[in-house]
Image (cartoon, rainbow, N blue to C red):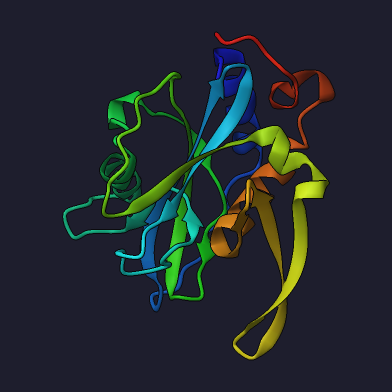
Amino acid sequence: MSASANQVVRRILSSHPKKSISDPTLAPAGVFLLIYNKSGEYCVLLNKRTQQVEHHKGEISFPGGSKDPEDETLLQTALRETHEEMGVLPEHVELLGELDDVPTTTSFLINTYVGAIPYPYEFRPSDIEVAEVLEVPIHHLMDSDNKRDEVRVSDGLPVNSPVYSYRGHLVYGATARILERFVELLRSAPEEEVLWTKTQPSP
């Protein structure tokens, strides 16, 4: 994304401090919601997980994973995992802020960092972890035609959950809830600053 767009996203996130969850029964995890300007379209980087990974096989997710003992912080976890999964170097990530903590049905607590990377970027997805790279335009996520709410059962209770569709893929679970919050925050920007909904020239 361009510097001006980065500033808008950073300001939005700083105006909405993250809501933290403290639950020692959940395993801490860190992921990155990465955004960038691809040929005038601002995109979010996602990937489809392979059948070889331990958790969430075949699902659409952000690059990231559970905290390792050598990780001093969850930011280090998110940067390390993003490099391992997608080949994105930590020094190429501009940190813009954080989103609310999100628990998963598989007993993880996701800490989501929002960052920007330059583009074009030579992604190097892991053959073991990544089956497909998805570059989803933000305006696609903001289009209500591409989102629906489904009722899923969690702990025996019905829960409304967002589901996004993109090129034959369905994004659900924690990833969809994180995207829903991100889109909600983007909608709070004044119309003249909503650069991600317009076709912009590449910087």
